Structures are given as structure tokens and as C-alpha cells.
Amino acid sequence: MTSMPESQPTKRRRHRRRSRDEQPERVAVISVHTSPTEQPGAGDSGGLNVYVLSVAKRLAEQGIEVDIFTRRTASTDPDIQEIAPRSRLIQVTAGPRSPVPKEDLPALLPRLAGGVVRAAADHADTLPHRHSPYDVVHSHYWLSGWVGSRAKEVWGVPHVASFHTLGKVKNEVLPPGDSPEPRTRLTGEQRIVRAADRILSPTTTEADELVTLYGADPGRIRVVAPGVDRSLFVPHPRSKARESLRLGGARLILFVGRLQPFKGPDVAIRALAEAVRSNRELTSDLILVVVGGPAGLSGVDRVSELMELAASAGVGDRVLFLPPQPHERLADFYSAAEAVLVPSRSESFGLVALEAQACGTPVIASASGGLRHAVVDGESGFLIEGNDPGAYAERVLLLLADPDLAARLSMGALRQSSRFSWDRTASDLHDVYREVVHTATR
Image (cartoon, rainbow, N blue to C red; front, side):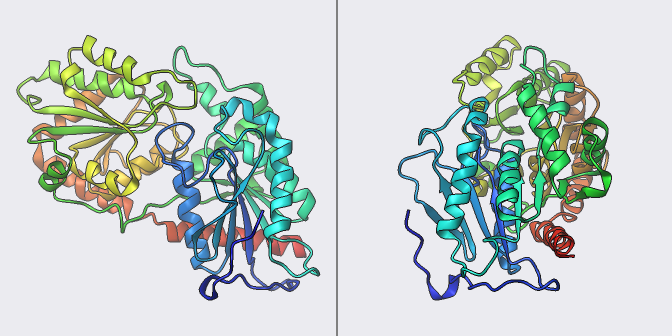
């Protein structure tokens, strides 16, 4: 492998050994099962991808050099890709240079760990006397946590772990017919919880779940909320947003996410059907737009299944399915919608809800997990206990029937989203990195 040529604006600093009072300068970010540059909304890509990429860029702006390690999934992928000044994506070969089902990745973890260590040695660009190429290793998801734990041992640096979803939590709210998370994952998560120097949680809810379900040490948990890019997700005039989407005069409600039972696209379709049955006059021009693709690599045709569901519910002509959209395009979808439905069984946080609110669109979400923190019931949208489509339909009809309520919730959505930013997330992460580095050098 060849290293990326250094240009003057992005030239990586040569390092000397740090004193105890110095700041963390270099961080290795591990995201082996999905690259942050992949399109969210299909396969194994989602909020984690948005998080890793957004935070890496902001950390680099704050003076921390960030290398993101991921598994190579295409023969044409470059060894190193600069994603921002002072921030690089490094591809590691382990197994075939093609996508691999997530359930098969545990067998590749030893090779991934070895590949990360070798790639770091090849591309760290450090002076020989520096004891480690990085000051901190930060893993995302349990598969990456396994690799992060091994990197910690080799490099002798602190390990910070983010899970993004927890297997035991998912198993507690499993949709009918879905397979539970495997024991391999649960065991892996448990080991990471015990060994990581710090565990990051997006909310106090997940922090409590880490303690009660995994026996995590509360003293090693830090709550760091995710953010939203408010330069990208801003309100667009609804009429212009609809026009840009070529939806004519139709009013729409919106679902954005992977098409898997856990995310609840079926609930969104049934909610539309319930709303139409309850009030045909008020919903005469209402459609549901579903943006997303199937989860994983199973090849299951979720779109056909959901189309059949819509037809059997009597709303086959009112549901429009679209593939995952680039982030800059999503702002138009959010702005065009009367409401965004997030009927997930559980979410670690729920970035879709945050992005929608930043566009001034009320969110109707399940009252589960991090969504309780993302949405303020009655102020920025509505929270629904359980998965009853009728409850979602009732809130949709409330918004359609009461423009004043819709306007009030829209303003509340903007206020709620203003509490979150990726700059703040990166700053909080910087504080955690500084803490673990200081602890390690005492």
C-alpha cells in the first residue's frame, strides 16, 4: 500500500512524545462493518455512518487528526482517502473485497484487527521514538469494539466504545417474525463493556440500559448526544420543496429509514390507511412517501412486501417508494412533509427525527429509547406508546385539521433541533479523549 502524498495545507504533523499536560492529537476511529462514506438508509448503513463522518470532520477542525479504519468492500477502493483536512479513511482488506453479511463478519475480526494495526504502522507517519501512532482508539458498534480492544492492547492507548445499538435492547422489543440478535453479539458487547476505558451513550436512557442489562460501571459511561448539520437541514418553503420533488399538489407524510420490521415501515403504511378510513375528506390528497432500502444483504424484497401491504390496506395508490437519498436531498423531503413518522421499536437516538425537526417538520415517533430525548411530546411533535397504527393516524389527522397546531409544533421542532450540533458533539468527544489520555498518563 502507498501513502497519500502530503500537501502543505493538510500535511500531518510530526510527533514527539506527549507530556501529561498535552492534548490528544491523533485518534483512530474504527468502523469496520460499514464505511462512513456509504449511503445511509440501506444495507447496514444508517445513523452510525452519518455520526462517524460528521464527527471526524469537526474533530479535525478542532485540531485532532482522525484516521477512520473500515473494511474494504470493493477492489477499486483506494488505500487511503482524505475526507477532510486532517481526516483520512483507511481501507483494510479482510476477507473478500465485496460486501459480507454482518452475521459473517465475526469470523473476520482477527484479520480485521491485524489489518488495522498493520495499516496504522504503514500510514501513521510518526517518528520512530513515538510509542504509539494514536493517543486514543474510538470504536463504533460492537464488531468495531472487538477490533478496538485488540488495538488498545497493541498500541497501549485508551479505548472509547460507542455501540449505537444494543443487542439486548433490540431483543426486548423484537418484532414478530424477526430473528433475535445472536449470542455472539451479546457476548461481544459484554466483553467490550467490561474492558473499555469509557463507554459513550447518546442519552441517559441508554446509559441506564448499559448499567442494568450489561452491568456497566456508571463511572466509565459518558453521555454525548449526537448532532445535526443545521447548515444543511433548514426549513425550505413547503410548496417549493414539493415542487422540487415533482409531487404536484399532494400533501405527504414521510418515512425515512431502512426497510426492516424493526424500523416500522409497515406501521407507517397502516397509519396512512387508518387516517384515510377515518377521514376521507381531510386525507383526500394525502400520500405516504417511503425513502429507504432493504437492510443487510439478504436480498429480501421488502419493497414488494410493503407494496402488497399497502394494496391490501386500500392505499396502494397513495404510497410512493423511493431509494435512499443523498443527505442534501433529504432536506427537501423533510420540508415537503406535513409530518415525519418514526415508528421504530427502539432507537439509540434517532437522527432522522432530529434532521426533520431542523427542517421545521413535526415528528410523530415511538416513545422508545433515544426518541424520548429527540422529540418533545406536544412541543416538537408527538410520542406514541406502543406500535398501534391508529395512534399514529390520530396524530396525523390532528396536524391536518389544525394549521395552528401544526405551526406551533413546527416552531417547537426548530427550537428542539437547535439544542444539538455536531460541533458540540465533537467538543464533548474531545473532552472525553482528553480525560482518558490524562488518566492513562497519571
